[in-house]
Length: 358
Image 1 (cartoon, rainbow, N blue to C red):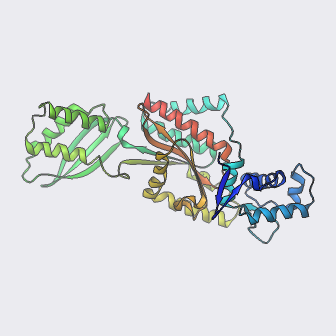
Image 2 (tube, helix red, strand yellow; image 1 turned 180 degrees about the vertical axis):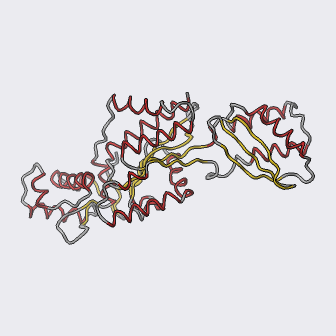
Image 3 (cartoon, helix red, strand yellow; image 1 turned 90 degrees about the vertical axis):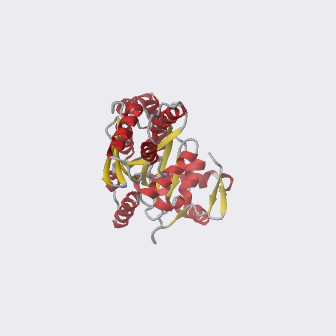
């Protein structure tokens, strides 16, 4: 864990906080994570182990406020951690817990119980995380690891066709592709038969490699127009980043639990709006694919959720070759139980990776 944490344009170091300041700051953060309420000097003086008067506690709180770690939400004497304060707590003070054997077995059993379908495993895993953390579970998955079952070309217009692709786990996707001028209907049938003989049970990259191999070996006895149809059909699934991904969100209703005030309801409404903007969520989660281990975004650290004051805890999962093929995690209020959620997300990501790889 980092010991120096940027706060605005400055850095706060643990060395700047003596034992008394650390304890008071920790109590304010832990009270917020538990209740969502500000903690005042009188209650603080009763909670800390070092005997201090409320006046002395207020002096320490003033120092912490000056450092940008806490703030007063109202005119009351109570204080809450700032987003920067939460980041400092997570990086420098928090002790991350670990899952016990029963919790590990529960996660393994529940996710494995979804069966062999990749879609079911990912949906079950995101639902499990949502239930365990009382937040929204999210998964960003690559479509490249889905195994194919059937593909078909359906003519829409003389120069356009619909390509229907069905995966082994029952997903159906459609794309519209251009057709060469003067293409006979028989060429669409030939392209369909050619692909179906070679793609079944393969992922898209595997199918593409198999077709390239067949063409190189001269086994693709297709005329030029039919070859163009085959190429267009495959190219339609190589797509851009967002078209190439599935986003699964489970358990948004948990975000409506434990609302304290009207401003909380507004925050959740904004978060729901953010989750509807699929492209931005995909971009945000995609950032976790370029990093090892669990990533934590608190409040305005990600522009997408800055207005709703939400936190995101996500971890990548891998395929048999060790390549990252997606991310899984939770999105919820900034007062998530970070110490408990982080190991849950990390372990669930590892379980998902093993099941998908297996």
